[in-house]
Length: 250
Image (cartoon, rainbow, N blue to C red):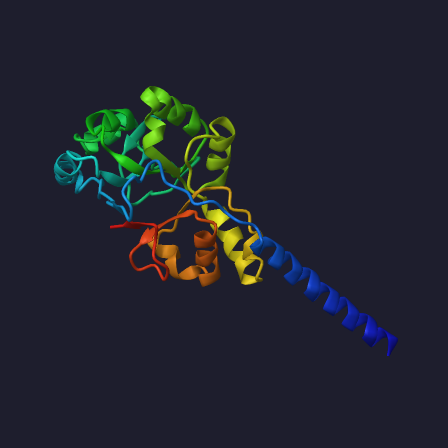
């Protein structure tokens, strides 16, 4: 009998502590925020298909789109084997890991896609461009190359830097804490896991921008999306999202 009472006491105490912490999290108030990058309310973000097959035609579209100040883009980047950054989408090898022999050199990329633009050249060519910069290269020196380009003429103020790789973003935040970054995939996952045990109000959310790609839309809980909205964070996703995004990918 005493054992049963002890077990029940532990259970009730755990229950009260668990939901006590959850309630405490909901007492925290979050100020309204205004994005300095997506200056248009409900901005639509265009994802150009800047791969080998579509590069020339997409540049033509961007010439027209970026003639105005409503040029919000979701840009892919490519980090070559000789450590140069280009605006380019490699469909076969989208996520570039150390030791992958398929990574092209600058010369190989320029031979395959003569129209391809380096990241700095792209920013200069399209000064009105703003939006997401996808940096999916889990390799040494990526931030060493990225930071000087974006620091030049304060280009960083036009972009939110996104990546699948949390170590890249954590390193960038340490060096440039005032730059805008997306939540990484592991940060999304942690917040989702916290929401699955009803502790979403205590989930660590270190970024103001939560970019959720199409493949993840239906894998995250509704509580996760609601918590993003409660904290007045910026939610970026396709229109098929179960919760209305702050800014929509198109």
